[in-house]
Amino acid sequence: MEPNNKSHPEEFILLGFTDRPWLEFPLFIILLITYPMAMMGNIAIILVSKVDPCLHSPMYFFLTNLSFLDMCYTTSIVPQMLFNLGTSKKTISYMGCAVQLYFFHIMGGTECLLLALMSFDRYVAICKPLHYTLIMNQRVCILLVATVWLSGMTYAVSEATVTLQLPLCGHNTLDHLLCEISVLIKTACGEKGANELTLSVVCIFFLAVPLCLILISYACIGHAVFKIKSLEGRKKAFGTCSAHLIVVFLFYGPGISMYLQPPSSISRDQPKFMALFYGVVTPALNAFIYTLRNKDVKGALGNLMRSIFTSK
Image (tube, rainbow, N blue to C red; front, side, top):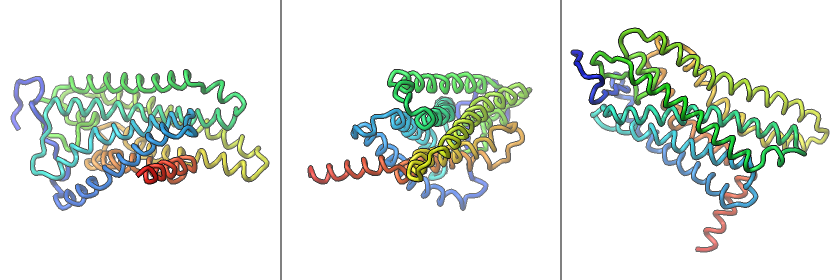
């Protein structure tokens, strides 16, 4: 492909799995099934958290934000993936790529911080129960969530803007299913060591630091739980944390394995499978984990369904 004099290409070609065409149809069907499931599961959580007065607490306020974030996260990339896998046209406009880049990383950065915030909420609830309503009042919760969203936006706008300014020397082929920072850095020409270093440092802040805070929170929670004498009390305390812990490991595990290494060392297919995992698997599992492992959510969902059918 011959370089041109334009500052950026009019469109990008997303190769996806064109080298493995037999994978495209099965992945298309999987996405077509799991995407609506993820959306419905997260909508259900938001709905019951708003409707049921028993769920008007900081824990479910944060959970509502997580569900909304997961819906935006998956919607920012899955439609493009379906288009890529389901048609022979593998292109995305430059503007579409830029929009996807911003939204994808806003949601990813915000979720990293929101999961840490949710672990802090559990720490206060279990380790400082008498001060819980005082510490986690409505004003503080709104302020914390607003800070998390603003931090995610700041990271995404700054990092994505710098990445989009890298020279591409006319190259417009991305070996991916979507527009993603590490892949654009890998595609860029010229000196990009500073961009790789900056991305690694930012990812340490948004992945490693929140994960350390989560681990510290749960170490304190574990210490407090083992001080509870009654077995029923211990089970209840662990029950409120188990769903969040599973979601944390599902989110941080693959993310750390990918983003805390230089973009030049990432294997060819790793970003594609990570995009599929974060695009649909994580949002779908988050919804079902919180629905199936949380008695309050299950009860509220059952009450909502019964009221709907009774009214009919």
